[in-house]
Length: 327
Image (tube, rainbow, N blue to C red):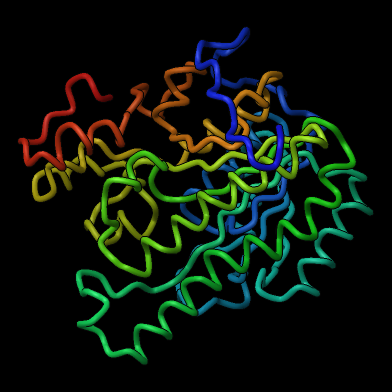
């Protein structure tokens, strides 16, 4: 792949042995899920563990200290869930805005494991002022939001990649997953509710594209991956439901019927990690629903929600909520 040539379109036909992950498919693999405290990061860490991987789970909220997000979920809880799923979870408190902490983390992984096979950049945490145009907010507030958003959504990913990829490329076949919100195709045609949020997520997608060019000569693959309408802990709380009762929210938010659990995108990452032909996706912008059709995994309820197709064809057209054919 040349530095100015676009990635080739992947063959999206199912790969051999594309059944859902079971047992120890990823035994011996080492993963770093940066930002694995909750949400998609937690779902990814647990599903990698379910496939037998050793997973380093990082974040700022531990059992003894919370980040400014002030959420109760901790990295230790995620690591315990990885263990319970069949893998090995290792919680390490890291502020990924601090290069020395990230460098020390990678040195620890190298010393303890000797390799890094999978890097998931899922760091986020910015507070966004929604439904206000860039001129409706004060300039000071807007610029503060922009700096904060881009630092947490972009700087952390760049810092982590700088250190972690030096170890990852030592073993051919490495995988880097840049977690984002929205596919390139969807984001190109749709405003993402906030000027600042739109910029941040576009930057993450572009980072995956750039990393794909730099990693290809080393036999590694980089992709951008988005879940659909994710039932994160915060989302469930906002709707006044739990993962067990999430369907109750459909009464006041009908399109919530297309939502998906964090396990779904976790299974997408695990499927990519075990695919011997994963390089076919290099530089691509992918979704959990898209990959479910290729690899054959399902969400926890046995369905395959395809949220981004649903958004385009149903919700954004103002049609009544109907997930028939979309999950």
